[in-house]
Amino acid sequence: MQDIDEFLRKHHITEIEAIIPDMSGIARGKIIPRSKFESGEAMRLPQAVMVQTVTGEYPDDGGLAGVTDPDMVCVPDPATIRLIPWATDPTAQVIHDCVHFDGTPVAISPRRVLRRVLDLYAAKGWKPVVAPELEFYLVEMNKDPDLPLRPPVGRTGRAETGRQAYSIEAVNEFDPLFEDIYEYCEIQELEVDTLIHEVGAAQMEINFLHGDPLNLADRVFLFKRTVREAALRHHMYATFMAKPMEGEPGSAMHVHQSLVDAETGRNLFAGREGEPTELFYQYIAGLQKYTPALMPIFAPYINSYRRLSRFMAAPINVQWGYDNRTVGFRIPHSSPAARRIENRIPGVDCNPYLAIAGTLAAGYLGLTQQLVPTEPLANDGYRMPYQLPRNLEEGLTLMAASEPLASILGEPFVKAFLSLKETEYDAFFRVISSWERKHLLLHV
Image (cartoon, rainbow, N blue to C red; front, side, top):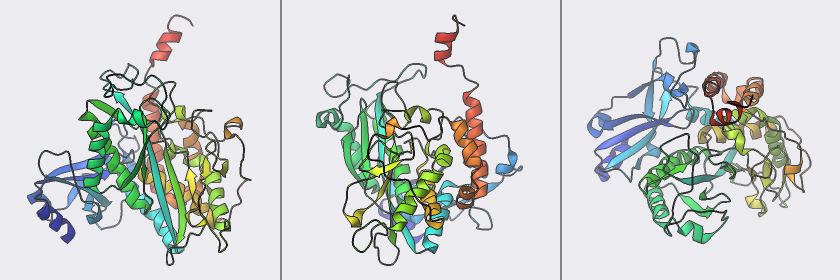
């Protein structure tokens, strides 16, 4: 806590946002006066917060968090304290870990799930390195959820009418917004890298520098908050929905990943002569075998599966290939020392902690089971059959049947996560959509 105390004094902090990421990646917690935070009294939250659905409901299974709805203790992680640059008064935010009263970790906490996977790698002397890429849309403020989203008006006074991939001028349309985003990110030390305009109308992408998986998950979690907040200040929304607009490509969170020796830092995907290693192929094979069962994490909502369709800049199978953007796992052109695997399947609507944990878990199982991948694909992956679940229900069935994944991610977590997603799925099917009213009301 000494580092936190010094930070609070240095920046004259008056209050603290004590936050935890729930299973949806939503920030939960409390806003605490500095005096109370410094008193040493531990923050408590109900364990049920972890299994609150995106609609605000809870699974019927009371055993997930305990029938008495017990509390958990939230312990601040000093490495995560940062300023909140948009706050009126000097305010800090601190991400907390969740433990029981005896000090043992809460197994269903997303941060704990990622730590659990990283511990397995550490026991082997391996250190994963990741670099996420986040796509998102800027849209006009939309107060009526029944109305379609539209691109916002930029500095020219006109909205985009066509796709402007990699256009500098299209990014310049929103220069004031991006200046704020970069300033906010710099103040929070989020270390974002490049900004590009993606394929969709007013669709952007921000890349992160590679680094430690838990640190990157924290930064992605905070980045989403930052972009949404900055967009509001410019009278628009930033959305991380996987498929926010009909006819436009969806938004992904591509995860570049490699594996280094924990002692030497040597890339274990490259041999002494620069050749791909057995570990490299085994890791790919693990991704191929276990990704279908991880789809409720990579594509957590009904909307997520609208993104995963042919010829829409999103993969539909678990093929892999060298510098091939039509497959699930792309090997970018690089030097042997930078050899890495890009998982192109997760949507940007995923929880970054769980998505990174999931992709690393699949790779770990490939390594420990010494799996063998298919041959790399050199042609169009979109013309091959679907290999991924087509909907959330199918993904939940596959995840529930995968004992190896439950052993890596933790059975309590998998049980709680499945129950939460089934509750969200049931809530969706209670809603009658405008498509049904339009096409069925008077014609069937």
